[in-house]
Amino acid sequence: MSATGEVTAGKPGRGRRVILWRHGQTAWNVERRFQGSTDVELTATGVAQARRAAGLLVHLRPDAIVASDLSRASATAAELSALTGLQVTLEEGLRETYAGVWQGLTHEEIIARYGDEYTAWKRGEPVRRGGGELETEVADRAAPVVLRHAEKLPEDGTLVVVSHGGTIRTTIGRLLGLEPHSWESLGGLTNCCWSVLGEGARGWRLLEHNAGTLPEPVLGDDV
Image (tube, rainbow, N blue to C red):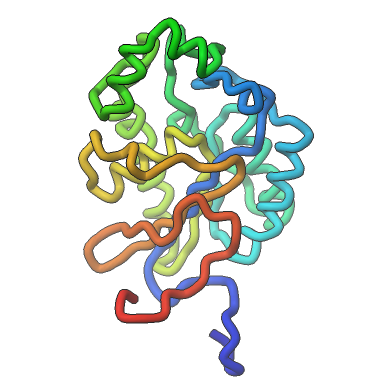
């Protein structure tokens, strides 16, 4: 907060901060096709979304940017890199869930062909969707990547992680210590929106979820 009492963007007062930012729109998003680890590029709309979001996130003064090596994530990260001058570190471990035969199918096709498997997944059961990865296996590879880069930050530093909706949700669940069957309760992320984790006295806290605006300070007893 400034001397005039106005809220200013920038470094938090204490603790590290991790911004988990979903990539911009792709053609498969629009068609409701399950992308998984398939490398699908951003649409023109997706690039515009990334550019707009980067224009906001730059005000959080990130110290580092790390991204999935899939093009939709790396291209999104490049927009923030252009504004900050920070180099993007690409990590295979931040890729979206590999979903085997589900990949490339529409939502309707998955329900029609693999309805029981889909329903079991939504109930929170451990399911290898399409013969692919378990959600816990995604967390096993992605969460350590986030922690490794977060540990390199100064004590009040900010890390931006550009990844995918499913990977971000499982990573948040793991870092918050939630049981895997409850991870679905976090809800999805809109293209180019983000969630914010802050380092607290008892570990990581979810400060914002599926946000598209700059974080505001918490005013009240839960600071």
